[in-house]
Length: 79
Image 1 (cartoon, helix red, strand yellow):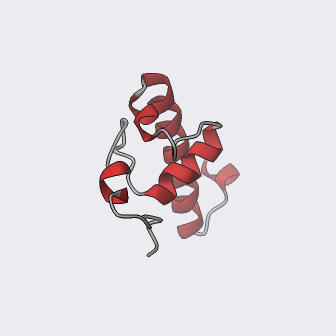
Image 2 (image 1 turned 135 degrees about the horizontal axis):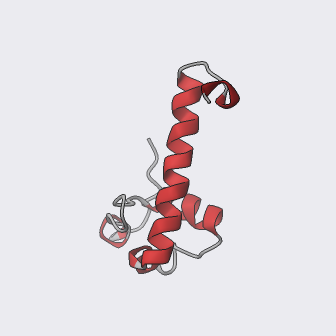
Image 3 (image 1 turned 90 degrees about the vertical axis):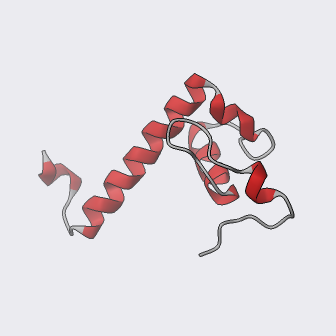
């Protein structure tokens, strides 16, 4: 799996932050785009409560959709 860490020090730079412990550069790129924040250049933003909350919500939504797909179910049929 490609984690997106391409430069020396990326592992430390993109270490676990926020409520869900966001790690790896790819996730900082992905969730930064989703919430409209540049988390790659400023990874410490994830420690901000408002941003950490947005990341956590989007992360959980993403995980829920993945789970539903894995179970071969449609979201509208789960409620």
